[in-house]
Image (tube, rainbow, N blue to C red; front, top):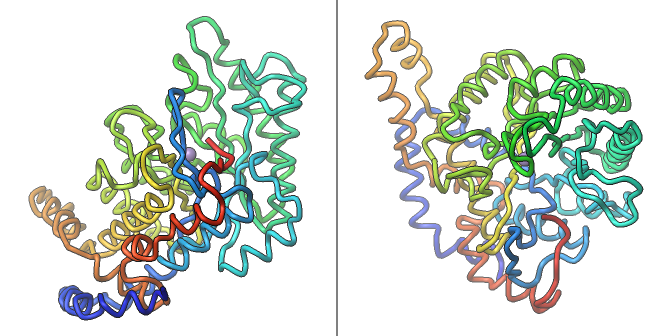
Length: 419
Ligand SMILES: [Mn+2]
């Protein structure tokens, strides 16, 4: 079934909804252009069923290699026109022929977003173990192995046309006394400095933080303050990366985002949602208002610095899907991001600034909630439609029986590399 054919049956209802929202704002065309430009990278590890340490329940038809992962993202992008980037994890996705992979991605309109290194697992045949950390390790040879791996990841990224490296370290400790905090920090900093030296001039490195897990007592890059310390010491190519699921409960992420942007040190963003910890839930499924408040700060902060919303920060989904079809979840995730971005673009900034100046707390709240409570689904759908996408990507996915086709082609018991 063609996308246009599926759109046909939805067109009249869409037009009514779009005419209504277009009449509510004089910013319609500007917002549509920004939505069209905004692309969210899909991580290569999110295309298969995720698992927990208790079990894994595959959906079937999972991509068996990097080529099939790119095809899956190509399908998402064809439907929503907003998933035009892939983020690779090395060594899970080492391209055997980078030129071919690059060409295949280009065919699907996909570029290579941040590369991700992996020093939180031991790989088959690996000389030294990361059981007690990687860049923080007391053993210099293990630290060097982790440095070398990251430099290798940069090299793969250069071949693919990526321009950034995300470093997430699981380094930390599980018990008090296990680690000398200052020494762990210094070792990690020295390792990051070596990696930093290997970055091409046009590259960025993102230092991702996480409050806990897999280490349950301390994490060596545990929060945004620690990440910012590293990024500041490393230099202008180093930035903090915010992953929504990597905070302690009730952290004010919107304030963190605002201050990192103010300092010019926010580099990238990992979207997901969580209720308890790093739960890897679908973006916007648990705390949509928090997501809106974060986007509100992102838009306000990027505009204050004259930044390009689409290009100047790295936008990526980082989630794992245990009970949903991964592709359906990713469609839902991207949709949630686009809707929230559109709502943040609708905020009446002049009115909000005036309310803040007058300490008019009630109006300030009303301005934000006015935007949050606006149904912008037709705006996002119109942006997709104009770009050649589907009016209802999830509806198309089901109507066209995409998963059944993938199972037929790839088999029921395929396992994608990843988490
Ligand atoms: Mn992440």
